[in-house]
Length: 352
Ligand SMILES: [Zn+2]
Picture 1 (cartoon, protein in one colour):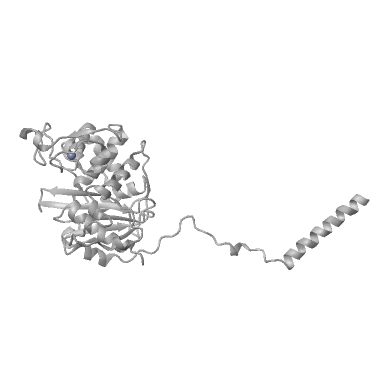
Picture 2 (cartoon, rainbow, N blue to C red; picture 1 turned 90 degrees about the vertical axis):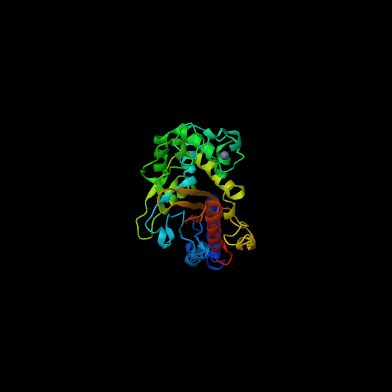
């Protein structure tokens, strides 16, 4: 009886203490009081970049595509009259396909080196004119002194023709077109010689969207949504690399902007109009890391001439913006990359 009474007393004491807390104590938070944090903070609405795009092109003929890598939504597509409804050769951008194919097929590893000799060390008969068709000839490289023994990351960031000529030849046309289709180019008619195709000569004609989807695959590391307009239904893609190929390519794109052919897209890079202009990036406390690749394509059909590409995205992790710039009668490193930089400066400015 005594034990029962003690238990009963303890029970009533507990009820009294709880009642005191409920009625007189601090209010218990309800479910509405807990802020519900989204897994990823939503991105701020994109600034209107259309005037920045027109300004950055500096009255050149060209085209620009800007998209959100996370959703695949195209934010802006701009084409001057000469670039509407047309496709252009991808040029050196095709080296990204060759690198991916080479790594995936095991034709190269990150450390495999090929020799890029100085042009002066080759017999004139060994050097092809661009678009040459003798399989014994080596194309001239962008660096007349040659890059020496060079591996894939540096070959991409410095756009070495000789490395990708040799890799393209090793892979063959069938494998190159297979991986080009995987990376968003669809079924294309490729040139005859795999070596020339490997470094971007003899490349298929591409439109902005196809180039955009190549960079979307790299930005999203193989998994995401294809680029689309807001009104279109979005379509997922899932490329499952067997190797660590996207990591190698992303490192190369970082290096291209830091010290390679795409330096003029970088914070502090030169403007398209003035080499004196430090640009808006210099005023940012933490400028974003930009990843990108340039391409200069020689167009033999009408209209002839060189055309410049830049494709890239920023920042490196969880990229917010993807950009493709095409400049008619321009070059990738000196014309298209600074245009991209001027647009990215407006996008990333601190008061957005
Ligand atoms: Zn080279």
